Structures are given as structure tokens and as C-alpha cells.
Amino acid sequence: MFDLIREDLRVKARWCCGGDAPRHILRVLVWDGTFATLIYRASQFCYRQHLGLLGAILNQLNPILTHAVIGRRAQFGPGFVILHSIGLVINTGVQAGRNLTLENGVTIGAEKGHAPVLGDNVYIGAGARIIGNVRVGNDVRIGANAVVIKDVPDNATAVGIPARVIRIGDQEIKPPVGSDGI
Image 1 (cartoon, rainbow, N blue to C red):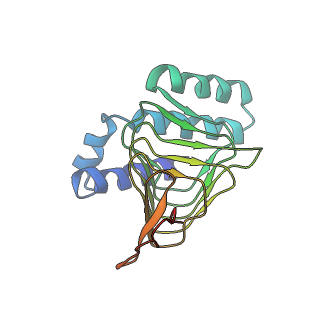
Image 2 (cartoon, helix red, strand yellow; image 1 turned 90 degrees about the vertical axis):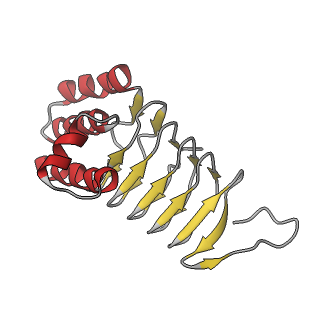
Image 3 (tube, rainbow, N blue to C red; image 1 turned 45 degrees about the horizontal axis):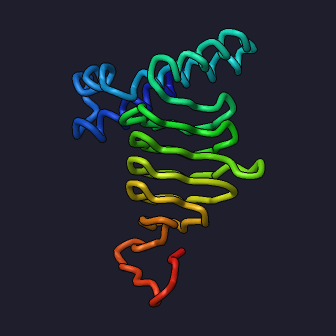
């Protein structure tokens, strides 16, 4: 648990402060979103140690104290960063790799029992929604208020409602006239 928390704080310090020096890590300890991440990691630790009641209590404290709802079985690799916790809703079936960064108001939800799977190095902008049996690749950026209902490939930037890929790597993608994107 402590290794995960340490990496979460390092990644957030690099994102917010431009480096992961101890003074930057101390700064992000008191920033919005960090407490939600800490509660989530502590809850997960309790579940793994078969301390289910304590894990459940911590899981229920997150929405009360931070306004973030994170399902108890959701899995995130190291570098899980919540920049702003208000309005964050994550389904219990969500899985994500390393370095997931979330803004406020993000919803990552299941549809018909299928939850999204996110790769490594994913940024999700404020108010974005990722819904259903969707795979989001590695090194992806989801724009603010985008609604992702289809897979997003590696190295892509997706925006809009419904979300469409506008860039893969350095190449801009122009959709055909009348196309809905992805």
C-alpha cells in the first residue's frame, strides 16, 4: 500500500508542481483530490488484508468527506491521481493501468454489467464520461465533457459527444463529413 501511495504522490507532484522533490510531495498532500486517493488506497489495503468491515467503512467515508464515489473493486495501478474529487464516480468493475489522472466530475461507469478498461498514462478531463464495455488505450487524453462509448486507440486524443478521435500521436484526424468520429 505504501509503495502505491508513494508513487501516486510522486506522479501528482510531477503533474502539479513540475517535480517530485519532497517539498512538492508535501504540498500535494494537502491539495484537493489527494485525500480521496489516500482513502481509496487504504480501503483497498483493508480488503486485501481481509479487514472487510474497515474497508467498507473507509469506502463509505470517501463520498462523505471528498465527494468521490469509487467502487470497492475498482483497480488502479500506481500513479493514480485525482486532481479534483468533487463529482467523481467510478464503477466497481473499472480497471486501469499506471498513471491515470482524473479531473472533477468524471464518470467511469458500467453498462449492462460491463465496465471500461483503461490503459497506462490516461488523462480524463473535467466532466468526461466513459461508459460501458469500452477499452481506452495507452497514452490517451479524453477531453473535458467528452462521452466515450466506443474504444479509443493508443496515443489518441478524443473529444466531443459522442467522443471522436481527433488526434493519434502527432497526426490530426479529420472525420468524414457527417461522421460521428470514433
